[in-house]
Amino acid sequence: MLRIAYLGAAAALIGASPAAAQQSPAAQQYPTQTITFVVAFAPGGVADTVARTISQKLGERTGQTVVVENRGGAGGNLGAKMVAAAAPDGYTVLVSTTAVPINHTLYKNRGYATEDLRVVGIVASTPEAVAAHPSNPAKNFAEFVRNARDKNATYGTAGVGTASYIAAEYFFRQIAKINVVHVPFSGGAPAVTAAIGNHIDLLAVSMPAAVQQIRQGQLRGLGVASPQRASAIPDVPTYAEQGYPDFYATSWVGFFVPTKTGDAVVQKLNSEISAILKDPAVEQRLKGTGFDPIIKTDKEAAAEFQREVASWSKMVQTIGITVD
Image 1 (cartoon, rainbow, N blue to C red):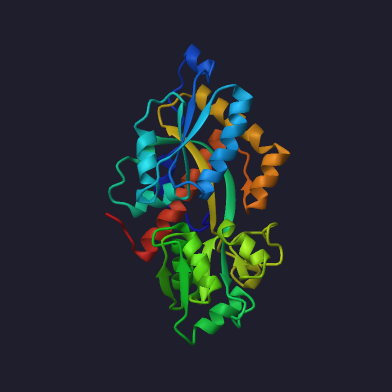
Image 2: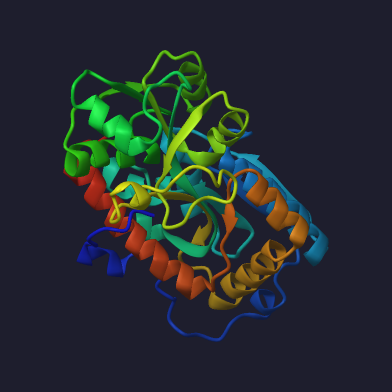
């Protein structure tokens, strides 16, 4: 979540409740058949991990089969397009990330409109983090920024267009006002490997991708872009502690359905997922990977999403990138 100036246009986006209408008996009895979670990214990623954790528990609670189907590609747009075009009955659910609000502005041709999706819930969040090889002279991010003014420092991310890239690029250009050369990789894992090998000066990544390496001392955590220190790596200071109090960048995982899905279905799905997130085993698993569970109503999640669209849109427009 990039908490900076919001754009007024977001108020009309995802989460507006459909016109009040009598819900059908099928909606009231939901679910009565197999639910498919369409994960917008490849297996093993953060969205996939959260989807599989929730799907197992949802199946147990409802007595229905919950299938996880990975539809990665186009930065998350292929999966989103599939769900946007699905029947609005709650049986085809998108599991995606901050990519949804980012892609609203980043991609010229997504194959669907952001308004074609409705938020069920934003269920887990994690801060963006920066780390370096232990041999780097900087002991924290503020020192890295000071040192980088005098040399051509490099930073690596999981690729152009990712939340980590957009957040880091905006920070360096607009807040730190320094020139740092971006080195894109084909994913978080290759970027982490490059940082461990000391091939780049800085790693900018969502925390779960590097939390184990920071804990084990393979990387030195320099900062987390969250209001409080992350419980998974409590020794790593926040940006605010280092003189950057107005910059927060958090990636998240959310659940979405086609926009015409009825209130009863959305609210039932939201309440079931919220109950699952309160399970101590689920909470422990998420926190162990660097995520904090988020429990909000569908309306609260929709309002948060609107703010996210505005914030990420501002970032994308400021750094001036688009994808056809």
